[in-house]
Amino acid sequence: MTTPESTTPSNDATGSTPPTAAGKRVAAVVYNPVKVDLDALRTAVDESAAEAGWGESLWFETTVEDVGQGVTAEAIAAGADLVIAAGGDGTVRAVAEALRGTGVPLALLPSGTGNLLARNLDLTLNDLPGSVITAFTGEDKRIDLGVIDIERADHSRDRHVFVVMAGMGIDAKMIKNTDDDLKAKAGWAAYVDAIVKSLRDPDELHMRFRIDGEDATRATVHTVIIGNCGSLPANILLLPDAVVDDGMFDLMFMRPGGLLGWLRIWAKVAWVNGVLRRTKAGQALAGKTKDDKHLQYGTAKRFVARLSKPEEIELDGDGFGKATAFNAWIEPGALAVRVPAATADAPR
Image 1 (cartoon, rainbow, N blue to C red):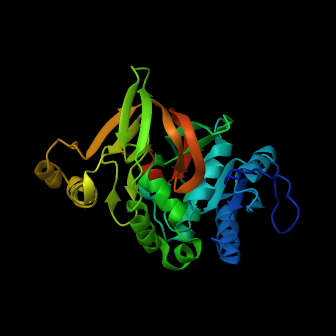
Image 2 (image 1 turned 135 degrees about the vertical axis):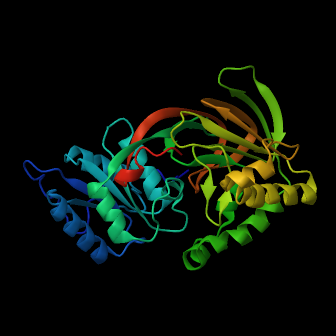
Image 3 (image 1 turned 135 degrees about the horizontal axis):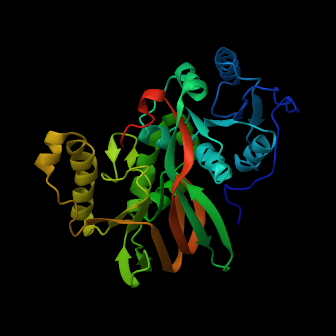
């Protein structure tokens, strides 16, 4: 099975990698050519790098075969002091995967539909010049990384990272059912049709799971989410207590009882979490209790599960095929992300 994590190296369209400028820091730009205006991006990066006293930037283009891991490894080998990810959530996740354990920071130039990590860091989403300036003049904020070993039906295993969330159930099925052409034209609205298709699926997840070494538990759920942070587009706050640098996962289990159960879940996620819990007054009105029989939350440093049959799994909004089991854990502060200097130490 082919998954989005293939890592065939690729250089940019120039066919060469400029040498690192002696005595100057150098940034590498890993960009998805489908998601960016390359001319505008080059102009903004070249100007900001020069103004900040950095050397000439290195450029690496992603491909279908290499969505970011391979070219990011090339950038690190070439001596990059910073890697700028210019693309959608898949590009950001792939670059973060390659940066794990290197100490090289990541800068975000949000592009695409979700911009999930940038959204959860409160970064500006539609300001290319400002985002590029932050890349060269900002400070590094340490955030947690989710790491997951996925076991397949043939008993093979593959390891990945995620910066936002991993999930099984309606979210993974929704991603599988989303029409890519419609997504390119309609953006986040394209998921509405996919949600309708996914809700018609009567299958539930039958799993045996273990949290932080505790006794194993059996459960039947419709959806399970393992989150490093919890804000989604359309003002949806899926995981209201998730913090990107607290060294913990936030867990969510959906167990809706029919249509009424789904309506209650939607009301809680979209209204109670998405609106009320964003303000102190709203938090007081909503109360402290977040759990009910349809929706339950928890926290963990490690979450291990085995499914009764292969199920779709997603990482940061991309489908990763079917899994029969997985082992997910948090690596505290494992990724440095460039943010505006005034917000680097701000609590989340």
